[in-house]
Length: 254
Image (cartoon, rainbow, N blue to C red; front, side, top):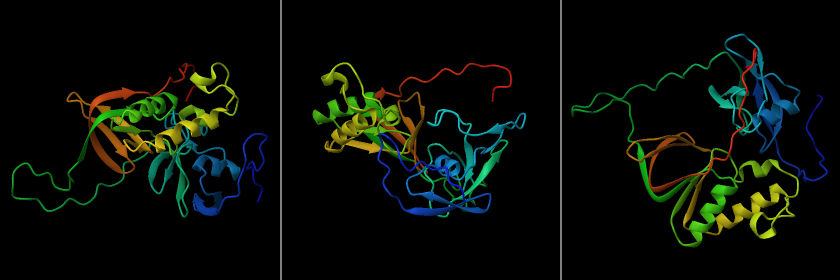
């Protein structure tokens, strides 16, 4: 089979990785451990991941960083963004044609006698922290490093599977101040430097692949940590989610 995987790069090293099997529309395909679903599909020559619910236009890679929803697929029956979701051995991936359908709700538990009980609902875990930082890019990592160096307990959440934000996409060398912005280093290396600083600080906890869903009036922040819905109550909230490209609207835009 023809492969479109990049095995050499002028800057990045491409270490050998274990091959794993997954399925696209029931057809077995090969991926590499640590690849996103989108990367694995592209490597196998697949460019169209689904079709828009309004006009049937083809959908696929657009932002490649989890900011839009054009690469949505169904992975083991759940709608996910292919560009930021890692492929797993045995994963069953299907195109998303139209809007996703909610999976069936689990069977409700037998009703309890005491009032106020909601059948089938588990107790939501709540976590209290002095500081919650949303965003694991350079701003969030720098803030966590400063607070952690003072011994302040910090929880940092990021929706990606690794820290660094946009830095992990940047292979060019930075310019400016060496002390302030690590001039002379590539973005990918700066991301690792900042992440390593965080790993050495025992008061800083990191939740990866965790999305902040809402900030409620009572100060609690809803976080989807993997498959778990958690309420975080911080004394201080620091939002470090970085800028976002402004998408212009035009005819036929999907």
